[in-house]
Length: 94
Image (cartoon, rainbow, N blue to C red; front, side, top):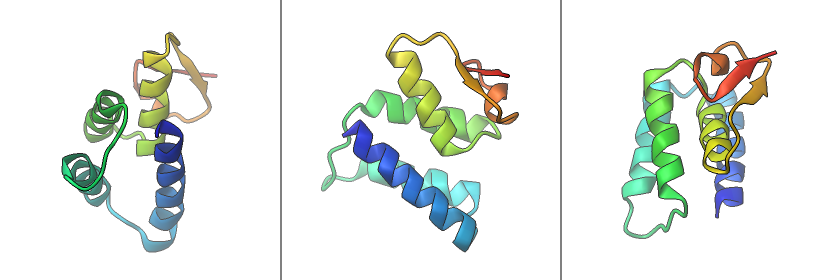
């Protein structure tokens, strides 16, 4: 399901750029998905950690999800060119 989560995030990011969703709206939508009785979200801990990182940082949700997912799989740091993502401990700016 995590792979599907990534597709959801990619699709959502494309929509965000076209429709200009605010960060608050993205966070609220992810929170609603996590709280839904009709939807099973695998690896909820990773998604919740990503949501928390998203809410306290300037990084995008896709970056937060990637960093948390990599961390849960044993990755110490994820290299990135994204300065906002690099503000999170899970990332290192290259």
